[in-house]
Image (cartoon, rainbow, N blue to C red; front, side, top):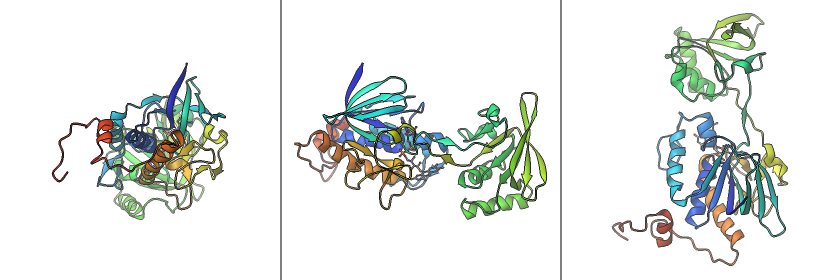
Length: 348
Ligand SMILES: Cc1cc2nc3c(=O)[nH]c(=O)nc-3n(C[C@H](O)[C@H](O)[C@H](O)COP(=O)(O)OP(=O)(O)OC[C@H]3O[C@@H](n4cnc5c(N)ncnc54)[C@H](O)[C@@H]3O)c2cc1C
């Protein structure tokens, strides 16, 4: 069965979610798909417990909390969400509509497409030692979903970026032991975090080794430690019951790269009026797009989604006159938001 819809949104990260909202305000219905099992994109997958400080009017907001708030905000629009569905085919037909297919066999006939695919199907860069894959998810981790899981354990953390340093600082006092291993003396992380880490080393609460993982130490089915080769070539055997590696993400555009749109450095080139790609009717918002001055911030993606919604409305209904309406005062928007009976505020 083919599902008919006005818009298909590929990707349910923060920008895909907010795209539902902006389309909903204009009365446009959509289906939202993500290859992951749940919404939230990078916020949920990579840093759910971290606070975000640069969302307007929210001085601090947990990454998962932001996703939860977005889900709450888009509820009135009843978008149908399909998780665990990677979109593999997007094909523009001669009539200007799109055939969309997922790896799992869902089929759509859509009036327009928004790609909010972030960094694509992202994969963490793995720890390059033999056998590490056997312990993935049990003793070798590439992200922290529940910090408490690592309390009281012997930890070795790898990496020199913000994630490695933030988790080092967070867990240093809660772990049974902690060592940070980074291949260079220089860090990409915030200097203040690096200084705090050095203070912890100086006070004997953790170790730092400039080096790389050489091999795992195992006992039967268990990982019991890791051998580290330091910068001078000397080996150090570190006891560990969990290894956390934060080497960043290897962006894999995946199927998106095969849909015929113009790419620049693995991102979709868009204009800054409509956020339309090189294929009319396919729009791109959030981390997946590029244009002069692009900054990969959630805030930028929200703005892009607002403008893309108007452009999508025009693509779908070129005869329709467009008005800018305020959510504060528009009766039709109130109806769409389900707040039609809200009492007028003083001054209305
Ligand atoms: C550690 C860390 C901290 C950050 N802190 C901040 C911050 O403080 N402030 C800020 O503004 N930004 C921050 N960011 C960046 C922010 O998370 C991204 O800008 C934001 O997530 C981009 O949202 P998005 O919706 O474009 O993409 P994403 O969040 O990447 O979501 C894209 C979704 O698309 C899905 N997808 C991709 N291809 C397909 C396909 N073919 N089919 C189906 N689904 C697909 C993916 O599975 C994914 O769920 C941070 C990022 C990281 C890693």
